[in-house]
Image (cartoon, rainbow, N blue to C red; front, side):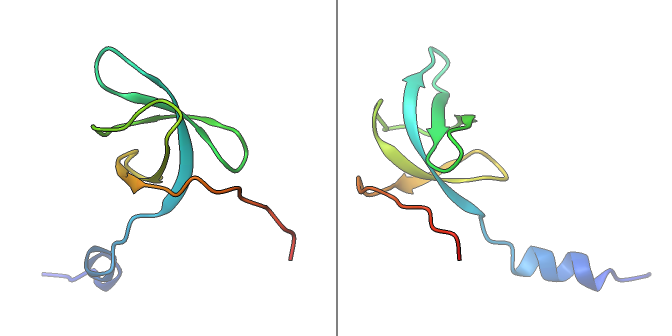
Length: 79
């Protein structure tokens, strides 16, 4: 049996890739429409207990809302 070390390490160290979005609409099926803070792209998220206008952290791979994000102004800077 051949072991794929790369796949095993990915499972062990899998972490959500976070981003920030602001909820713009809650659909009747419970999914959340949101706009990303960086890039102003529209995304469809899953989660409960959030309100329109609220900023949230979400997993970019799964679309799952992870938690509320602080309501602060963000600045994008080139480095």
